[in-house]
Image (cartoon, rainbow, N blue to C red):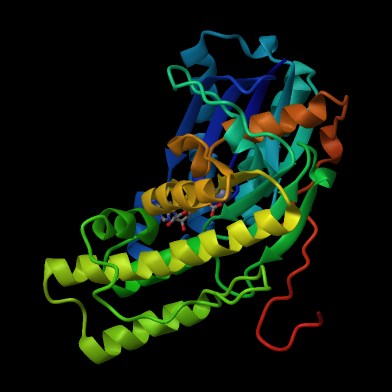
Length: 354
Ligand code: KG4
Ligand code: ZN
């Protein structure tokens, strides 16, 4: 089976051709980072307009790079939720038009399920690694979501949420702190780079909700602590202090993510952890999680770097799982700003029922 994937949920316009076993035949990502950078975050109206400009070129590109005719595909998968409505509509309308013209089945994909399955993608020339084995615990940490899941198979109904953030997502926290430190947008990769040569112990910062017994996260307190630090000390005056601040902040986020993920794996009695979402591209998270899990005999499987951030290959692969069951949303496909994954974590502060 060869499937065209289309992704336009946020600030990347992407298309990809992927086979049933996860081989990426060709993929193309047009990033809007430069467009949104002056605003320090994604501007929805600008995102929709830029998707409109680029959705046809990225689709054309994946076919021409692969030397494959559109009529050769077996189906189309498109992100239909969660995301910015105007942005999602561009991809969904393009997919509907193509499906109608080519007379192919069309399925909608939940963006978060795409991220969870990105670990199964194989890019040409990439080293062969043994695939992740079900059941696994997945940490999905991106700009919009941070949650732990138990995943027993590739279908939506095989994913259970174990705990999520009560407030900010980990990636959002990276981006807001990046903005606070005057680094630009998105903060995640910039902080990651600076933290590499910083001393995480040089700056005292509290740990965000690292107590045992809860798989929920909270990152808004850490963001406030960073603001307090800058108010007290001023912006880092020299390069080494900036690196140290980044290293200390990143250590708090990364160690909290790892601590909770390991606790979830132990609680669920699984031997495999999967990292997913843009924050899974973080060097320290990848390295320290693998080392700490190995001590407990747990394997950490990470997607290739370019499959961590938004892409259409993961959407195609998640769509294949539905198409293979003979599903077809065709023209009934609608968009939603919300995920279809079950959510158990209540947003906001306050007492939780046990
Ligand atoms: O998955 P993604 O591309 O988009 C969403 O679905 O949100 O994730 C983007 C997020 C941004 O917040 C970005 O700062 C973060 O992932 N990110 C990183 C790194 N690369 C991307 N965070 C920390 N370290 C990185 N290397
Ligand atoms: Zn994403």
